[in-house]
Image: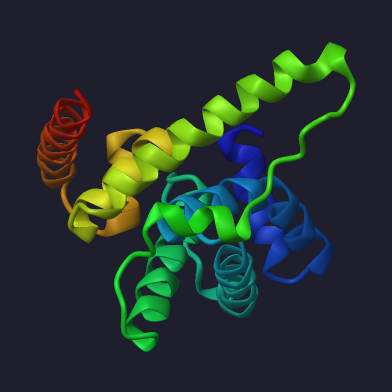
Length: 192
């Protein structure tokens, strides 16, 4: 969907629940994926994502189109909901080792699909490693790295979501990458 179509859909959604349903369909997976990466818990991610869309529905009449994708507004709501969740529950990010408790892989049984299952398992294990490293970073770096790598947003879009200057996003991005790289090197050195 191009920006003009999205703008029209958002305007329509202010008075039409069916249009909001289309926005939901277009954006659910993106928001859920982002929340899952940040929380590392399937159930929490589902709850927070539901809350994001509920708040979006309640407040869509206040949304003002500025040319930034609608997803950016939803990500801003998601960031607030993630922060609220962890503040209310009195703890920081859930470490990635807890993902295994809440996410299961569907592993196909036929031998012809075993290679695909092995690849999914390797990808899942890599995701766990990366999520664990990211979860150890300060939240300001977690947000930027998750939005950039997992949501594949541009730096100017991330700046809009976080309500900061693009230069701040660049700084957080590069500093976060440097910290992440140091953690990865330290972990690989400890294995050897």
